[in-house]
Image (cartoon, rainbow, N blue to C red; front, top):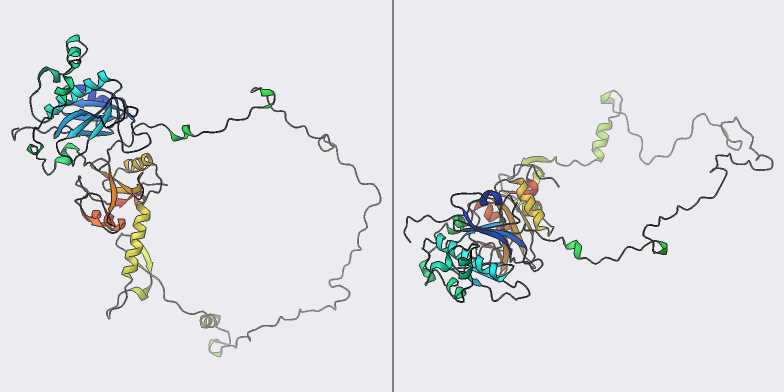
Length: 446
């Protein structure tokens, strides 16, 4: 392959209908298939797949305004029947394999064997186009249409043997460039695909609920009667009857201010006091200084001082913790630990709703805004960050007591320290850094 060959790169932020209406070059094949995901529940959701100019796109449906995932076929070596997939799971499954095992293998399932052969032939033709080679295997790799001649080519007994041949006889001949993953949207084998927003049934519909009991006499249209109230004088608007007999006796009214057994006093006796009355201060003209007396009882405390922290907000600090010229404790260690806790609280998304987490980052839409949510796998988390005008997802894995995003990248003992590292350094596969947790974004609202 010559150096002047143009590497096929997928188009970013394009809708399904916009992609299908492109005239130069045109889409070679499109239709519905099922795509495998790394989730045990709803592992094979339906996706609308489009082949265009050496790249593969898959959408939630044919009306989607953004691709759920896309990647270039440049570097991919072959398309095979996925014999490791059980027949009851996906009967007509295929896999697109890269020339290097470190990059991701994609699995799709067609609704019939005839459509599986059609997809394999078209994917192989686009794969040859993306890698800058001519159609090495002749007529079997030409695009398949509805005419009888091309249908006969798919029905050829040697079709699988021809279409499943590798493009590169030696995988070492393909050497990926340094920015290969970023340009061609290629993912590593251990990375998740960008298809977490594909259509999935609501899990609530599978929950068994007891049937609603029917009214009496098994008549679903029978209305329940309103219980009748007893007929009382108040209900009929009549005044209640007066009780019979003489009226109750009233005590005589007295005009004395004090009961007869208590002698009257002009001034009530003074209550006993624990403290003696304050002495008059002759220096102030014989008046008692209440402020001086109050200050003697209340201990003085040093006032709090506001100082600006490194995040740009003001916080109250004790003057005793401020660094003096003679040395001493500054409270920086406590401040760093509290900052780590604040950063985790402001970026952690406790819900397992992946679609909601992606919608929050997508709605904020600012470069570097991020959150961390729980993963489907036990004791793992997923970092969701907005970078290069789309949501990027990284699985936070743990090995030998250390956390990392990429196996060849930075490892750290704590997740907070790992996030701080990528606030100062670029993330794997993209030229972006973590900037602001989603809860601190001014447009975020709970």
